[in-house]
Length: 426
Image (cartoon, rainbow, N blue to C red; front, top):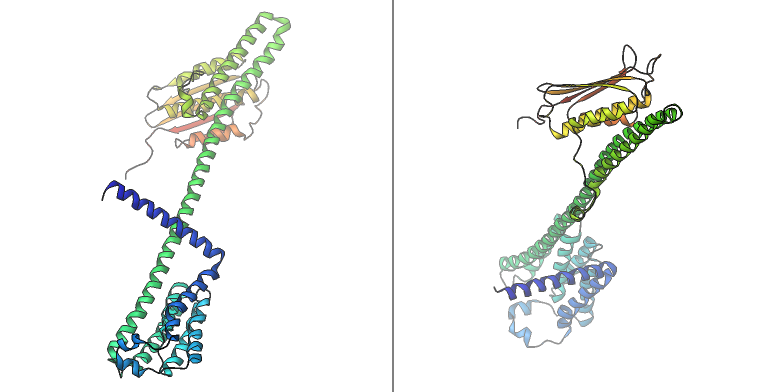
């Protein structure tokens, strides 16, 4: 098959598909139109020939069969035809009722010994029961149909073999039944596919919303850590600068410079976090240079910024920090940042902070302890977004967070991160 033939076949299939969709839409809007069309077609093809005078077509058929059938008056023929055909108007809404009415007329007709072409309506009714009726009703309809076929075979047994007639009639009934069941199964499969497609679309939208919510939560944690820490430092520096402006103007100027440096650092980090919202096309355009994710090496600068705000910070590390995964380093940095921010908020500038990071083979331990405000124990830290964010970050690495008042006053934060590979044996 050439490319042109393949293209023409595709166009034909597309047109047939669109035509079928339009017909289904029209049928849903005007269901009686199709039913009336079926009745009119049956009347034109099978009823009108029986109303015409006898002609040569009867002579061409099996003469013994023709002679064995009764020729009814015109009025009786039309009445029987109406009884066979008109119930087809309800074949889709009341299939079993239509089948029963047609079967009754069919049995009456053959009891009189008459044969009509309109008997095709009984096979259409059986097809409709298989397609539109309730499945538990189908065996009863098949039994009644078999009985009716036996009656016809008995009536024509004088002209043709009983078993040959019965085989032909049951084969025709089986074909009608199989056609109805095949279309019914096909429609059920299409309905399941449509339902599955709709379900997959819903699941896709849910996954998209979940991913969006997860990303928003991550962004919220990043923004909270960045803005909260830097604002706490800036506020502490501003208070110190206001106090020193009258007594030590040089110290106040240094404080203002530190505020500017802290603000610029916060702006750089915000640009880096918000940079993930850029479109891929924007990555090639000129713009602000985005800094890498902070890690353990940046904790020293973090401590320097806190010292500038007033607290004394003692920072030490034990173990090889350079071997830590970048994700673990970012988590450690953010946890330390949040802990120092809480110290500035609750313990104030006149406090001493001890910060230690210890690495062994399987875990990283982070300890942050402040002495609290001078002369009294530390104010309890509320269970706010900061502690919740620390716990969420630690949980990503199978870690735990413990935070509470220290025995000798102040506040103590202890975090343990699991450095072992996540997962396990398959």
